[in-house]
Image (cartoon, rainbow, N blue to C red; front, side, top):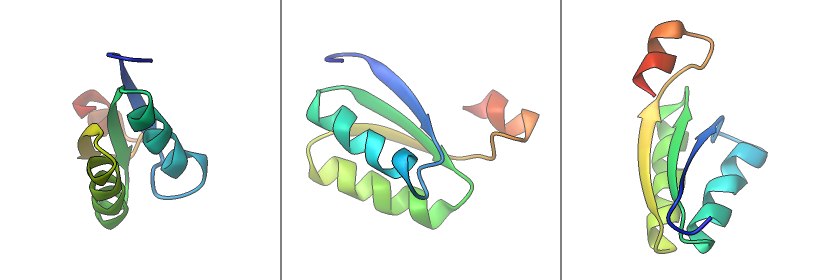
Length: 70
């Protein structure tokens, strides 16, 4: 995945919370989103502490407007 960008939704918990860290290990960039801004912030901090790159967006993937922003 080196040099690629992945979009990960649902980073508040479960597999969505784990995938961005794996991407950082593989030198991939992650665009992360979740409904909970606090969760996004903690995942962003973890990814950056591991040397990864990320863009964080508060979004609800059930909302068409939010999906358009992602």
